[in-house]
Length: 469
Image 1 (cartoon, one colour):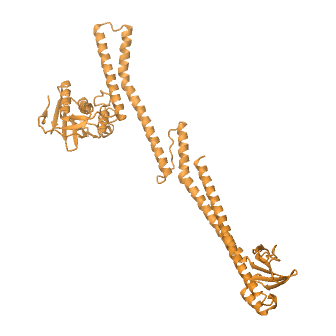
Image 2 (cartoon, helix red, strand yellow):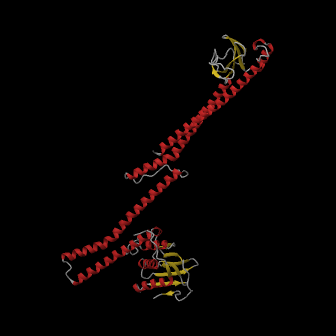
Image 3 (cartoon, helix red, strand yellow):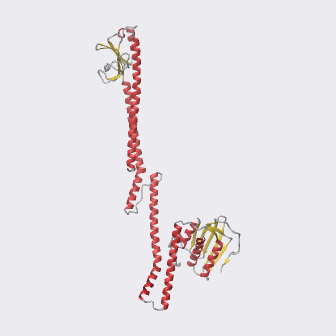
């Protein structure tokens, strides 16, 4: 059963309950009012019997009694019935010539009083009437009270309840329509959009979104989920395409060389040595790319970091020294203000520094200066790498941390474009922050902040500002 049918069933059940309550209310009020009429009739009968006691003269023969009855019982109908002949004693005001019919049974002395609802001899007026015998007489006494006030009040009550029911019905219908418009329709649209996406139309979105309602929030969250899923799929598609592009060149080299080897075209020793060298370089390129992709995958999955106390001062010194061994002709200046110790993953922190310095060396001319600064505060360590250019444009800066993205044609295109992506992922895994500022004229400045976590050792100036050779 869908939600709309459940809501309709609930509304129908509510209306039935309200109708039953109205019926019960009418019956209860009608019974109470009728009981009060019967009590009045019973009280009037006791008074009439007192007046008609043996010590008094017959009721219809006493002028004083007749006058008293006319005054006291002006709201009642009283008649003496002798051998079927009706002698009307009192007629209630407003009844005109109407008189009650004779009840179907007579109330005998010593038995429970039998009061009946009867019609009029002529007309549509209803009465509550009782027929009792007079003592020591062949005359029966008919006493009745008009039900016109009772019927009028009950009619007004029925009309009021009917109008109230119409108002409740209108409110329920309006509320149901409002709920359907604000609640069910967006949910139905979410279902339609989900069906359309399942059928292959991935551009569909929920258009009727009202964020202030729960259904609107659901539709908004559904749209956001679709957008994120679409972006993730697009990112994955680009990732696979970029990885395939990066692997295409070394794989093509390996396939080409093996094909030449199979055809016997590598006859000379120099040619074979060169082929083997190129095979090794291509294999290393593939291996490096695979290692970087595996590292990014592990970081994306949030795998636990091997937390240890890391002497960042020594680590950065080692990275700079290794870089200078590989490119001794380059100038790398290291600034260390004090002894810096952090709590983190030593291999990951080493790769941050190595990637930043490697990027600076790769993307700057031989005469460019590279400065590496390490400092700390009470709660965090700061690593900064600056190169003297050329820098990047604002558009290039916005894509600098994208995976497989590389700079413009004026910068070296070696590498897969994963260095800064790996740096950001490792920094985020350490709950840190990395920013990049660059200008085409002045160069690039990368700033990495790592929460220290561990304690700092004694301050030292052993690695003061200077050129590390």
